[in-house]
Image (tube, rainbow, N blue to C red; front, side, top):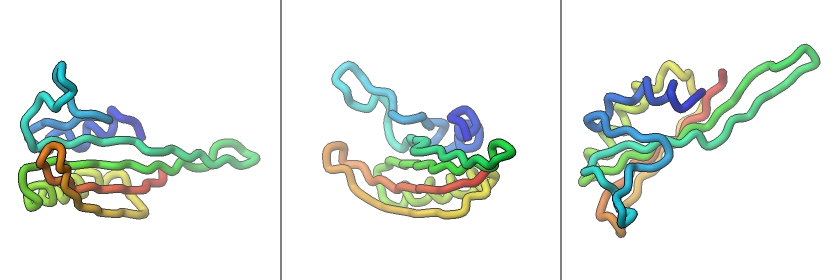
Amino acid sequence: MTESHIYQLISGLAGGQVYPYVVPLNAEGEPSVSPPWVVFTIVSEIFSDTLCGPAEEDGTLQVDVYALTTDEARNIREQAVNALSPLYFSEMRKRNGFEPDTGLFRATLEIQSQQ
């Protein structure tokens, strides 16, 4: 799982406003794009090994959708679930929240994938 692979799968979400790790910021440190947008993070990568060499790779990916309404954030998150299906994830967690600093709703998706 690499950033470029993830980006290829979800780059069409939120009108193409998909970014690894952080949304573009202006000089004041505030988002320089209008919502909605998607930020994704490869949280961890775990490599298993055997006496014969590498056996498997497990990874955790977090996708955060920021939008003006909770419905919009959830809808884009569901689009992300569908777009990421080629990763064959073994676990999926969904969380919802509100960012008081920005006034935006956040829908988070966390998946674990075995390669």
